Amino acid sequence: MTIHGILNVHKPREWSSFDVVSLVRRLSGVRRVGHAGTLDPAAEGVLPICLGQATRVIEYLVELPKTYRAAIRLGVSTDTFDGEGAVTATADPSGVTRGQVEAELASFRGKIEQVPPMYSALKHEGVPLYRYARAGQAVERKPRSVMIHRLDVLDFEPPVVTVELECGRGAYVRSLADDLGQRLGCGGYLESLVRTALGPFSLEQSLDTESLRVAFQREEWRELLRPLDAPLTHWLAAIVGEENERSTRSGRTLTLSPTKPERVASLPVGTLCRAYSLDGHLVAVLRYQGEGSRWRPEKVFASPAEA
Image (cartoon, helix red, strand yellow):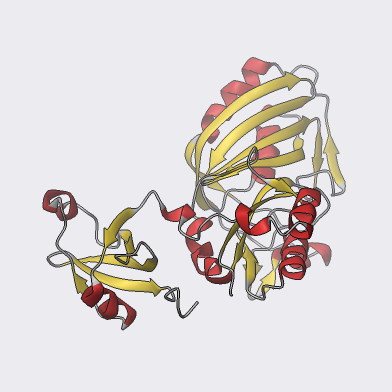
């Protein structure tokens, strides 16, 4: 029997995200295993591990908001924007007050322009930026629009500021730490980072790697799997009959009769929806085409018998 679902794992510091994938693949025997939302080795926290058909929802999972707790050390700048890099500048941060920090953080809330760090996996001409950085080559990076939904000071014990932020995809907390230090005139780098939530997955409900090993030894790990539609429950949902299920599995566009036509009429074209069979199994992800409530299958999942 093939296993499908999502494990909420607490990635430890010094592990790569792929290290966690390798551990789950080895312990479970499942070949199709992937992770959502890469964490740097120096960071820790929530890392959803998707097994089987759940790997097909990773692209939607990584779009969900993420919450972090970050400690920023003021007075020192590094080339990697974290404690792993070489020091590039130092300054006395003793004059910085909590009020100044909070005033500067206000400018980072909402939709902002952010330059990705050189030490990142973003690619330039097919090559990750960190490879250029390690070779001593600077690459011009264009600012990208990212969303910071929430950003608050949790603690201020000079020279360390601890903040909590909720952000969208593509935001670099390391860049935020460096930018804050520059705004304050003393420099700063990301000293530690913990991801406390990714979509519906929280740190409180996550499983550390040792507990994960024990769960596998006791054959209890399947009970810890979240269903593959867990990251999609904020979408609209539709129940399709047998005929529409067959059409969906054949890739044909559906015309659905909504229970609330006025709600569908106001939907933007491109809206996503979960489609379930009469017996409650996830059949597909549908994308709204407009044109009289027409929905195109974007991603079709195997039936229980096929899985």
